[in-house]
Amino acid sequence: MRLIPPLGGEVSLRMAAAPEVVWDLVSDVTRIGEFSPETFGARWTRGSAGPEVGATFAGHVKRNGVGPTYWSPCTVTVCDPPRVFEFSVGTDSVSVNNWGYRLEPDGDGTVVTEYFRLEPALPMRLYWLLLGRLRGRTNERGMRSTLERMKQVVEAPS
Image (cartoon, rainbow, N blue to C red; front, side, top):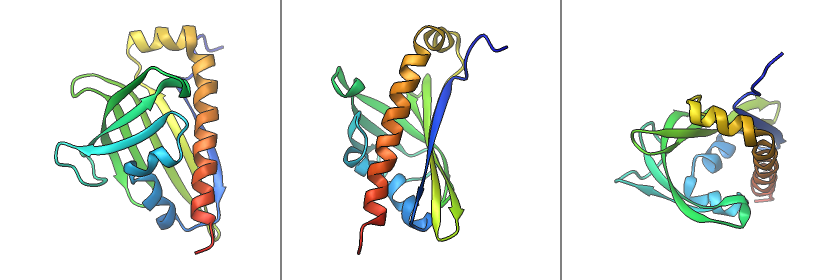
């Protein structure tokens, strides 16, 4: 029996689009505001101009869709086109959590999995123990909403 639930979660959705098409969307952080219920904008920072390991960006977040509103510094940690795009959220010295997308070819489409994973530091473990179930459900609803909105874009007639 686990005393502490996993420090994260994921949601998958099949999209009728090639992995390369989906990749272009999930790795363009400047478009996240079109899809996410919490992150309503993002911009590349520190001279970064696109997805690559080490690139930095800031996400403009409205927590739970109602506030508070703040900028979150992020760093791309995995960039493996067209399979995995992942980034950490936090400062240069302290990462709080990680978000990402895994893309798996599925016939003429792609199964897209959005996931999050908190860092296993003691403060985050305690947070997850106390509020994890509630926050996890919120994140899963948000990820499902994000993926459904992305699906509408990649499946729209050209």
